[in-house]
Length: 267
Length: 261
Image (cartoon, rainbow over all chains, first blue to last red; front, side, top):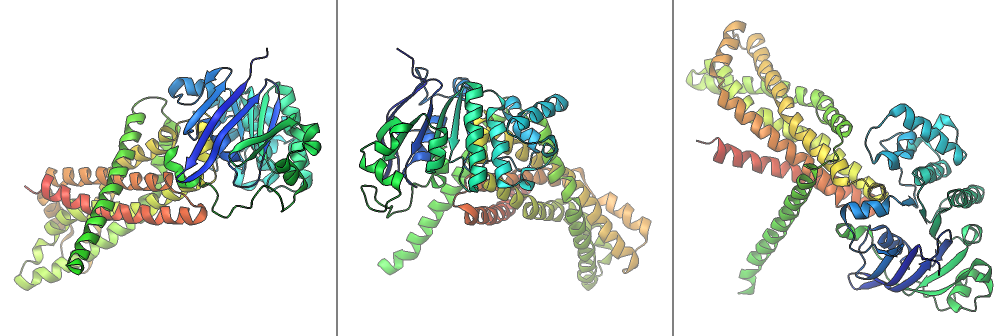
């Protein structure tokens, strides 16, 4: 039996009275590209942050190659994170650093290092995402949204992680740039032989980058299957979401979405 | 009776809230210092912050000290003339500048400039997920972001205050020699005679404490911010207001309890 790369069992997370995750179960095999879909405010980002250790689940288990991640701290957590690469929704590039310092941050963990060697390595990584060496010395603020996403992808893959996480990778991009990012994600995941977990509500992105798809609704995974089965799932949540209908079991949020930022102290 | 108790209840609630906020600030400082003593350290970040806090604050601190020193000399001269004590201008000027106005004004000016900048930068990093990105890249934000700022401000404020004291005294000298009829060398000799080591020590201790406070309030409010752009604005305002209040409170405590005798 193939060992699971990532396995979630009964993951719960609440913010005050609002139960965001109410028992998430999810398995991802090595080399698989899993995409979690779901409406805004359903807890997709919370799920990702629980896996990354940015939020601590109230209950449940998250295992990486069989090792429990919940409650992990210090060097053991650092070792697990060394295997992760993360592309944040807005890029989350460090404003105060140049592009090449951003790209090589995973190699140096913020320390200075050999500038010449690191800059050359950053230029190689930028080439992998279709950016020229001329952007290496710029600050992130002088790049367009699409270029920032590509730099953030270069940063995510620079340390050759074996698990990549993508948080809404195409949000805020025009359709052409979204397609570029989707292709890059697919190419880089394949090139690294990595496992990927993405969260998105962009169906174009789902069809492009997913091997398997999981639907998150009401705090649980309500359907999971191959991307080819998406249009014939027979699941009312998936059908409503894929077809973009207002009517169906997914209720529009009547209350404020789970406030991650309001729970900063939890981090 | 309830109308009588209502102000007391309000006062109590305010006291609990203020003590809670102070407690959280102290815990934040403790967590930062606890982590900062263990590697990894980031000397490049420290040097960058030392330049931002120290070098780039020199103009505003220098101008404040110059104008205040000059105005103080004029005021002491006018006040002293009421009881034929005009000659006390150099002595009072140097003691007031070194013991009180130099560190307090430098602390407040740097708080306005640096504390707000730290809060805004770190709060922006919070709302744009840059702090989360640091964590996923195995970098402790307390060591990478907070500790260099706290250490830089604590080290640089005493240096800034030495400069502020010198410029403040020279401001007094400038007015005294150009407008008040003082002899230049007599003014400087009198200034040196009345300046004691204890005054300098008091000044530097205050400066280090104020530097720590202004960086702490900036970092704390930025790090704990939430709520998008409005949250960044709130963090910046809170950082400056808290820094001002705590600097003035710390000044009183240090003056009365530590150097009052």
